Length: 208
Image 1 (cartoon, rainbow, N blue to C red):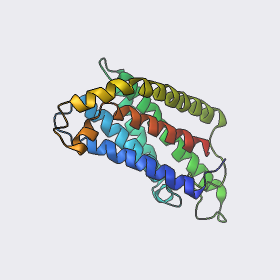
Image 2 (cartoon, rainbow, N blue to C red):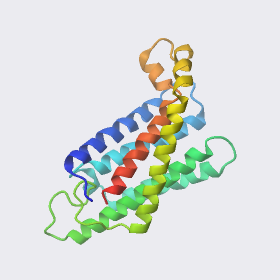
Image 3 (cartoon, rainbow, N blue to C red):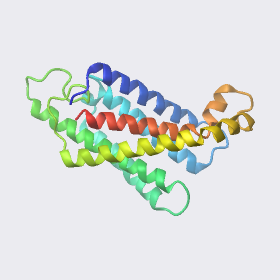
Image 4 (tube, rainbow, N blue to C red):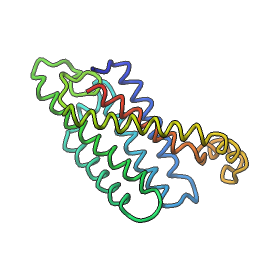
């Protein structure tokens, strides 16, 4: 299955906006360092997914070693953070899998571009318009199951937490009356961002 240009643009917009939101959360005053690390990891993945999903865009221009070094390093960092005792271990380990999946997709795109040859159209080498599937089917299937299950479980948890979150936000003191600051400080939105990026990852893997 190959993603059309429209799907590529939609994925780029969705993951890019999510990444920008996570990036904006880094500017919140009084945010614990542990939460800032999670926001930074999510921002990197969201913006990277957006760049990779753009049809005929930066996924062709950026050399594959850059993708590998950037997200391989992010995966190693998330893995180290996830193995430390304390909070957010599950989130960091999930991010490690996500960053490794980005490395895998970058290598798969490189294989598709190499296999396309000189006659490939301008869209080759992007998630929207790859010349041929070049991933490992078993690994792709495992990642699809992982991210699919994460999205389903995360969605159930998010729906279950909605009533308590809805009552907590208006009474919270972090917003200070500002709609933007309330939005940035909403406790349920980080989980929603992870779910959105999980759906984006699922869609991008499905297009391989």
